[in-house]
Length: 320
Ligand SMILES: NC(=O)c1ccc[n+]([C@@H]2O[C@H](COP(=O)([O-])OP(=O)(O)OC[C@H]3O[C@@H](n4cnc5c(N)ncnc54)[C@H](OP(=O)(O)O)[C@@H]3O)[C@@H](O)[C@H]2O)c1
Image (tube, rainbow, N blue to C red):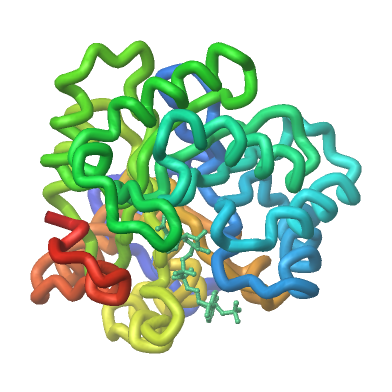
């Protein structure tokens, strides 16, 4: 009883590990407006190459992952589908997400693109389908300004696909608040369940996260470790390393845990078996350590790694 009010108690067994109050476990799932439960951790498969991605999915499913974050444009859906089939897991136990590419936003293109994904993944339905980017542009053509500014015609088609049973949940990706609010002005039958965006230590997006929570919209954190090229920097942030040492966790585990504790889905990508297993082992951080990391992440100048606007030759910033 005497110890109840003491926050840090050193134990002889744990040596320099501390024991903390306020430890609770992290949610294994988030509940979407449909009532479906989406697993908190997904294996991301962008840049997971052919002849690599299948093994990554197999290792992940064996390690306990039940959520794969893919996309048509990753060009590896067939191999992902085969690995899911090979696992022998019932379809309803594995959450499959895919994304509608920019060239298929015209309403008449949505269903054929979705069907191609379903065929490649060898499944009758997707658990979640996202508009990958708020950009409507057919290959080799200038972008469609009207459909880029107003995704509602695309969205209506997605709603139709839900009614047909080809998708369970729909959402968006890379949408800012302005674009979300634009979409919300339409008479939506189904509101977006998620917005998948870059969120990591360097770009933690606290304002968007607050807004999303107020609007019952789950954020999915992509490039959660900082993305290829920045992962090393993330994993050597002093606060992240210190927290890991204190709790007996690796820096990557501190980061994946932090994302879930903030209330976001986390989608780390790896094709390395040991890392796939490592990233899945999440644990709640004690309040003071969670707050320490949250403060460190939200008080430096935000650094956004990923913005394809220039590379795509756009005359506007896709995030504005
Ligand atoms: N909606 C979108 O527009 C969008 C954009 C970007 C990403 N995403 C999604 O988010 C997922 C993750 O994003 P991301 O791939 O950009 O970034 P990330 O998951 O933050 O970083 C991936 C990189 O980290 C390495 N890595 C993973 N775990 C590690 C660990 N424990 N220790 C050291 N290195 C580790 C991986 O290497 P190895 O693979 O070699 O192990 C890979 O180079 C993607 O796969 C995709 O599903 C979506």
